[in-house]
Amino acid sequence: MLTQTGNELQTMIKTNTHRGEVIRDAIKASGVAIGVVAEKMGISRKTLYNKFKESSIPYSFILKLGEIIHHDFSQDFPHLSKTVKKEAPKPQPQMSTNLLLPFDGEPQEVYKPNNLRECEQELVNLQRKYISLLEKFNELLLKTQV
Image (tube, rainbow, N blue to C red; front, side, top):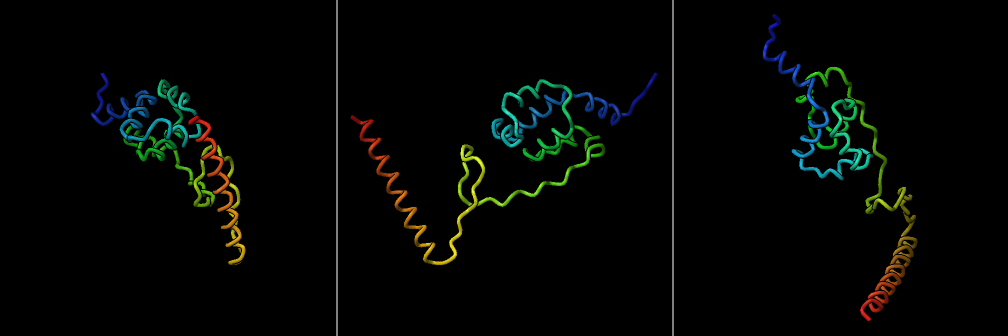
């Protein structure tokens, strides 16, 4: 008859746990929205929900998820920190401080004026553009109220 210590048994139980359920519970506990997690993972929400149903998920996926939701999965998978080496974080490209929306596509290079005259000209151009858009918006409002 085989006897096992409590720690060995606990480790065996944890290694046989359903990984999808573990990551689902960790995401819920983190308070981060599923859509946000999926977007940061580069997958759809449906794909993430399908991952919850899988019992065997690659540890690289679990580590990436842990970084996003700030969860240490080595507590759930004790051998994780020993078997999987963490990849060095990729340097993030320098983004402008402008608001980038998902439909904007690739960020464009930020215009930097060389002198005060160019800066003033850019300001005037942006003011004209703003006024033009505001006038078009007002026209649309008037059309919809009729």
